[in-house]
Structure formats: structure tokens, C-alpha cells
Length: 314
Image 1 (cartoon, rainbow, N blue to C red):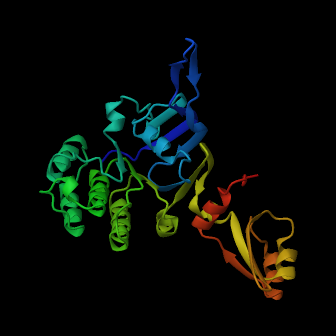
Image 2 (image 1 turned 120 degrees about the vertical axis):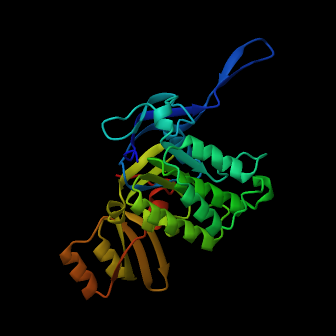
């Protein structure tokens, strides 16, 4: 197999929708374009599973499309490939043959049988595993003799997941591929992804709004917010960004000090706050002595708090 692909974005800007129109008096004006990415810089480590998180419209899909050469940046640079051999993916057959972007639809031929689409991917992807594809389609109970239009949304999503795993591309990107799947199918997909990744290492990017379900898979995390890369670090580093305190109002506020509060809620005399940073050993002892519970914060909660309107990383 080809070595896992890494990727790098340097100061990437992507504008969409710029147009010109002529007024009745003959004056030509230019309508402003919408900005999907605004100076995004990022390094994707090869050979790891990276979670790509962002609210709707944050720029996630645009960034993933750049890596797969579905979109070209307005400015800035994008390179993809093995370490030491990274190249611009745009109109680059060597890079694109090793990159598989899977969207919810699976990008299937709508007027052809599913088996025809599978044959197309098998011919296009040098590391394609027919055995893996057959096993997964059987697991997900997909009839390849049918056209995609005759299948449920969940079955079409399962085909997309199958294609992503069976290609074994050095850079495999799943963009909200779980949409339409029921819970058992989603969890089967997560288990299959981990098992195949362990046996056939490559770089996997996983974009999902179901952060609580998939965060166990993440080795690295990228958070896109309003067209910019808010953070890109290991999942452990992100988890270490915050902690919670639960207890009496006075004790919690005393221990919290002047730390940045990411979230606060109160029920009667009990207060829970989510704070940025970590407690030292002495502070932990003080918290225990005051009857304050110290907890970890899931990646999903940190993502929600850090991307809330008005929230800015220091």
C-alpha cells in the first residue's frame, strides 16, 4: 500500500458566488462573494484518525473538498501526499487516486445499479479491497442489484461508508457519511473503521456532528469556526483544555478563581461550571476538601463551548 498521506493548508481563502450585474442605467456592479475559508492554516498528520468539527457553515466541507481537489482555493496553498512528497492536489492524478472523499450520498451513479458504481471505484482506486466491500455490503444488507434511487437514505449512506473503507485510500475522508444511518448501523460502521484502520493504516478524516459518538475514534482534532482553524491538536490536548467543578456556589467560585468560564449552570444551591485550563495538585486537594467534584469535559462539550457566539480562544 501507498504510505499514508498528510496534508497542509497555508493561509487558504475560498470565496464563492462572486458575480457581476448591470443596473438599468448601464452601470456594472460586482456582488461580494461569500467567504467559506478565511486564512485557514492547518497541518494534517499522516497515519492518524482526525476529527474535523465545526458548526453548520463553518467551512468544514469546503476544507475537505480542497484536500480531495473538488475545489480550488481562491488564494493560499494546499498540498497533499506522503511526507516529503506533498503536492498540489488540483488536477494531480497521482494525489487524487490516493484520496477518497465520501459524502452522505456516496457519489453513486443514480441511474445505474449499485454494482456498477462499485466497479467504477474498484477500477479507480489501486488499493481497493473487493473482499472488504462484499463483506460490508452483506453486513449492511445492501442489494447491489438495485439502483440507489430504490434504496433508503440509510442504505445509500451505508454504501458510501463501504466505499470509503474498501478503497483503503492513503487519505480517506468521511464527510457526515453517517447521515441516514440508524444507531446500530452507525456503531457497526465505527467498529469496522477502527478494525480496518488498525490492519491497514492510513490517514482518516472524519467530519461529524455526532461528536459524542465518534470522539473515541479521534487521535487528533481540528475545529473550524467561521472560516478559520480555531484549533488543531491531539484529542488528549483538547480534552485537557477544560474541566468542570460541581458543588456549592461559594466553594466553586473560590476554586475557579479568575479562570475563563466556558459554561455555567445552577440548580438550587448547587453550581456547575466548565472552566478552561486544568487544576494543579494543590487546587485538587482544596476542591476535595471543600466537597467540590472535579470532572473531565467531553470533546463535544468543549467544542460547543469554544464555538459559541462571542467565544474566542485567548
